[in-house]
Image (cartoon, rainbow, N blue to C red; front, side):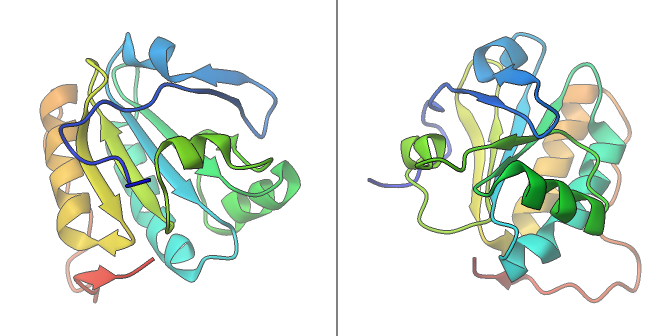
Length: 164
C-alpha cells in the first residue's frame, strides 16, 4: 500500500490518547484542520522533528487547529518521549497492530499529514523535510488568522532533509 499523498482523502480513524481520552478524526475536522504526526519513540528522526512540531503547536494550536502525535509505542513509553522532548500536544496510541498506520500506508516515521476540514490531505511529509514544515506553518497561519511564525530560529543549523 502506498502512503497517503497530498490531495487524496485521509482515512478516518479514532484512537485513545496517552491520557485515556478518545479522539476521532471526523469530530476534529468539524472545527478545522488536523496535523497528525506518526512516530516511534526510538526513531532518531522523530526525536529531532517533534520539538519543531511543538513550536508549530505553540504558534497555531488552538480551537481551530488540532495537533496529534500518533505513537506506534505503548502509552508509558510515549509519555516518557513526550516529557523528554517537551511535547505538549495530545498523543494517540496506535501500538497494537498499527491499524491506523497501515491505513495511511506508512513505511517510515515520522510521517506527518496536514488534513483539511474536508478530509483531504493538504501536505504529506515523510522523514524530516524543512520545506514541508515551513509549508505547514504557512498554511496553519492562514487558517488560524495568526501572523506567520518562523518554525526555525535565526542562526539555528537545521538540515533541509533527514530521511525517516
